Image (cartoon, rainbow, N blue to C red; front, side):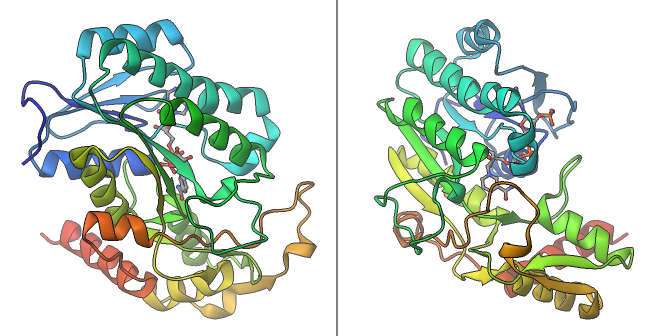
Length: 307
Ligand SMILES: NC(=O)c1ccc[n+]([C@@H]2O[C@H](COP(=O)([O-])OP(=O)(O)OC[C@H]3O[C@@H](n4cnc5c(N)ncnc54)[C@H](OP(=O)(O)O)[C@@H]3O)[C@@H](O)[C@H]2O)c1
């Protein structure tokens, strides 16, 4: 049961993306009307419209809010690849900072009472002082993290603005995107060695847990800043080991690397583990650990394949 008028949909930006499509399907399964947006990949949603929208186009965003008057907004669209953002900082600025600024401005103008949740990232931190609580100082080092941090401000300035900083998300593959688990499984299934840092730490979180949390924050209309990470702090290499065990891949394909060996010009934050306890307490749910989450992903996939 949601507090919103049943004739007004929840707007989900980035519905063709990994989180966005998961969230649309989660909301639709709960009977919530949804309108999703995409940029270049026309996603098909069950019993819901998906419409093209370039969020960098302020006029188009304004027109959508004026016509749709969404009951709530989950802003999941972004240029979400760190390497792509480093290579194309201007395009990243448009897809992250300008896009979010346009969403916040349109929401303030046309739907000032609607909760607006924007998804941010653990990479707003430089990774030298983990674990991070929501009140800790952000110090991004990558273009992606800097833009995501800057994009938090216009949303937090809204009366009903919510920012959820997600950790590394994993889950079943969607129509076009499958997150880091997708590329890991693809490489391992093809027998390709996988180089993973053993000194880079994250708190991987099951995307279904994030969908539950995002929905609850929107339903409760809880403004503010939240950390949405999983319960374990794991190195990339350990994540790879768990994936091998869950899906029966050869652990011998994993190659341990150190961040110091990275050829990238900007060093990656070594440890962006987050303290997400406030969120899970507010939501009334404990997020699953990686081993359990991977088992749930496998079971979901088996159910989908069952005749
Ligand atoms: N994946 C993670 O582990 C992770 C971790 C922390 C935070 N996040 C954040 O979570 C959110 C979702 O990430 P994700 O992994 O689901 O991303 P994703 O799979 O790469 O999807 C990105 C989505 O944004 C859309 N998009 C990109 N530029 C756009 C623009 N200018 N106008 C309108 N739509 C645009 C894409 O549309 P098309 O595909 O149709 O072009 C796609 O639907 C992002 O805010 C990301 O920064 C992700």
